[in-house]
Amino acid sequence: MPSHQPTAGMSAVDPAFISEDRKPSPVAKSSEPNRNKSYDPKKPHITETPMTRYNFYKHVNWLNVFLIVGIPMIGLVTAWWTPLYWQTVLWSVAYYFATGLGITAGYHRLWAHTSYSATLPLKMFLAFVGGGAVEGSIR
Image (cartoon, rainbow, N blue to C red; front, side):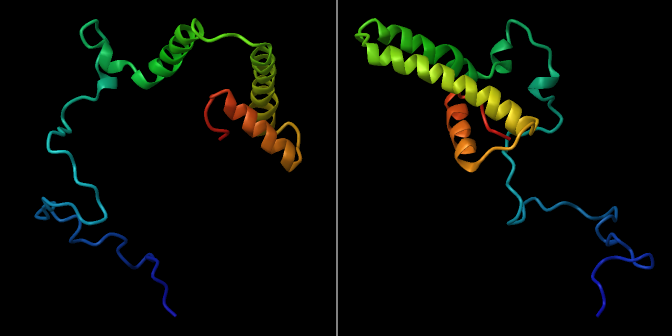
């Protein structure tokens, strides 16, 4: 049975594909996404332009700013009107140490360096509390 892989005697690329008179289709194939009409491939990407005080906002990842600054600010403002119970303090301290364990023992030592092996329940616990630290994916 003949193979469909190109061999030394066959041309690996169809000559019609690389001919000079071949023009790209103005409409994308069904397997290709359509480009935005305002897309200009000659225009430099924002990462290739220097940051100035007039365009700094284009270089900022605003989702990260909100997650790192906005959510704690909302927490501080709402904490003013929320009573503090001893159960909340106990939960906060326990959760703090559990997420720290999930990051150091789980994300770092277990999955990044594979410095030890763990059982499935321990892996699930470390993944859960490591995810609670909002550090991102295990991988």
